[in-house]
Length: 118
Image (cartoon, rainbow, N blue to C red; front, side, top):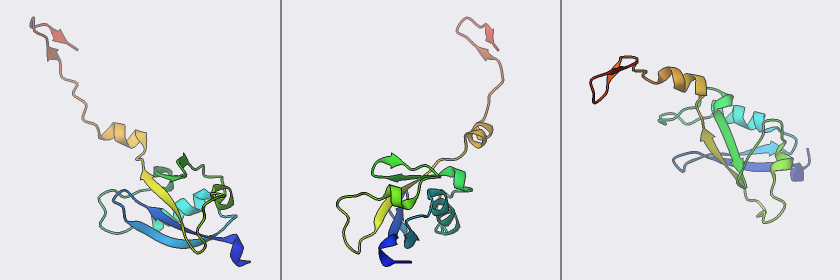
């Protein structure tokens, strides 16, 4: 594979630390990057992605879609020779899990007049 087809990418996580840099082919998909992030996530972090679906990648202010390739995500200007592209990682737990973990108070509540609200 020619050297110019390879792209160095660092992944910046919520606490400012980085994962990488790693070298990817321009034909690698965003989904492949997310798989690498989940498998190489640093130990001891308070927020940990449980699956690829919880990971969002942001580059140049845009959330990247899973089917896009690294070549399509490259910024055509301002690239520093030998520098790595930095993509920001956001962990967004699945909505279904977040709803089940919320404590639901089903007990009747009293209003100022003493009436119960169900």
